[in-house]
Amino acid sequence: MKRYGCLFEKIVSFDNLLLAAKKSLRGKKHTSQAAFFYFNLENEIIALQEKLQSKRYTPLPLRIFFIKEPKVRKIGAAHFRDRVVHHAICNILEPVFEKSYIHHSYACRPGKGTHRAIKQAQNFCRKYRDGYFLKCDIKKYFESIDHRLLKDMLNNKFKDQELVWLLDIIIDSSDGVGKGIPIGNLTSQHFANFYLDKLDHVVKDVLRVKAYLRYMDDFILFGNDKKELQQLKSTISDYLCQRLHLQLKEKSILLAPCSTGVPFLGFRIFPGLIRIKHENKKRWVKKLKQRMKEYETGKIDEQTYARCLHSMTEHVKTANTLHFRRSLFYGKKYKGKG
Image 1: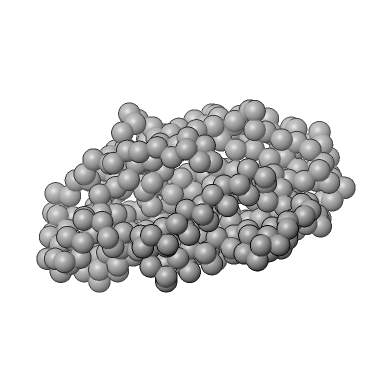
Image 2: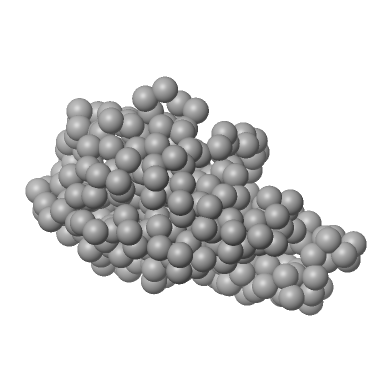
């Protein structure tokens, strides 16, 4: 494996920290932490740069809260100053991570994302329309990531001891003892995607699976032989347990004909169409009403509301939802499953 060096200086450069601060402000402009940092922007960046260069930087405690939809999850939100550091790291490391990823890995990557993952799943579904799919995800994935293994992987990837120091203290700032990284951190998203890159290469390069894709800890294999997919499930499960200290979520494993539809990222994907799941449809409507209320009460401005509306609409347009969208925006009676 190629090791990369001379990256720490790029991460802590003034220009990169300034860019990171601007990225961190997105959606956070009205918070007190962001306002204070931005008001003293140049001084804050210089002070942060000095702490990083002298290795006196220490992440502040995470703000812990829980979200209930689509399921109960523990979120660790970083202090604004630490968000700037996370963005600075990812600005430089993302292109390096990108070089090792397989084509059909879709999380935390430029030009990828959920929509392309769903479309590729449909492409595979069409190719194996008379075959089967094996869908798996990992039990409590973020909570189960082993700190020692993750640090070893990063140390094998990067030469800079200063960079290794910085990544180590961010990993250790998690509230878990020896395992687990907070879902809310940008670095956690990239670390989690990188952690499963080894699995991707085992599936593609060792097991020689032609039709495979992954979005974070959700992954699907397609094939014409049901027994072969069952065997692959056992092999993958053993690899995850022995090499990455992870477990498949047994109750979520699904091996079924492609003709029955592939449940993936909130949609059910068929060879000829894509449907949004009923519970996701209800969640989408609830979120839309929340945004409308925020706009009507002045909590968000017209530009923010329009941006939210566009983003939400583009997401459900991935599926066959024309009638559903018409019923919401034009008041027409909604019929059918679209």
